[in-house]
Length: 275
Ligand SMILES: *[C@@H]1O[C@H](CO)[C@@H](O)[C@H](O)[C@H]1NC(C)=O
Ligand SMILES: *[C@@H]1O[C@H](CO)[C@@H](O)[C@H](O)[C@H]1NC(C)=O
Image (cartoon, rainbow, N blue to C red; front, side):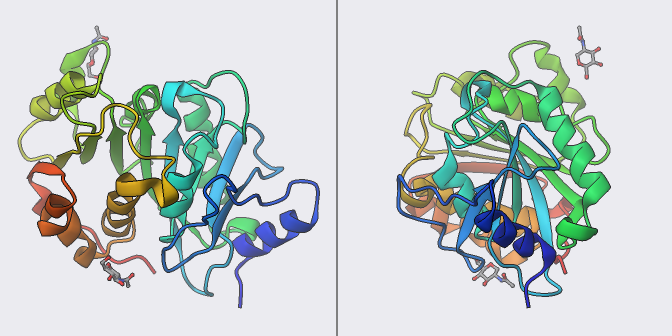
């Protein structure tokens, strides 16, 4: 049995807007929901959806919004990484279109929230649970994600090699969990990310991992490389409510892969398993 989200993908495969699995890396994710792919639904132009091609009946997908590096409107710039996360059971809505030109704004990400909040649980999006939305992004895309923290429909934030560029004090007002993934001291966003992590108020869950790869990350390595490994465990834990997946991020898994990790108040995350 396949849910309508996968039906949509299959219909798209045979029609004008094909599901295109990123060919550059020859991979489509290695998670339990693999293969995953991406497509642009007719109902929401200017956005790219990464999803498992099939979703077991009765299984729900949480939602991760993604702002691309440089706020680019090319939603496939980080395709191997995003495909990998989708293969772990998440609907990723990236701002922009496959190989699109130009740039995006935070409002493009807000359109994703509006759309999926109105359509989750219905029709083509029957398998989507929009009560679980995380806003995330790389570099400039992380600034787009930060802008959603004040939206009541968003539960948590993922900051990948980014940090506030103006009004630094805003981090002191954050009341939602923020997960930082930085490229070490050679990352141009390192100081900003470190500063925001430190400025967050006590009692709000926060996590920060540094991998010394610089600002470019590992998004286009096969399955998103080490960022894909930690990202997959992150979405399983924080979005799908799989408490066992926390062990990689907070334990020896991430450490053995070269991550330097600090965190606080993660016991207050209150994750519950998704359907
Ligand atoms: C900075 O951010 C805080 C928290 O959102 C807000 O209350 C404040 O008005 C902002 N300050 C400026 C100058 O934008
Ligand atoms: C939870 O995460 C662990 C660690 O990644 C994984 O082995 C396990 O299969 C996951 N459980 C479910 C129900 O997805």
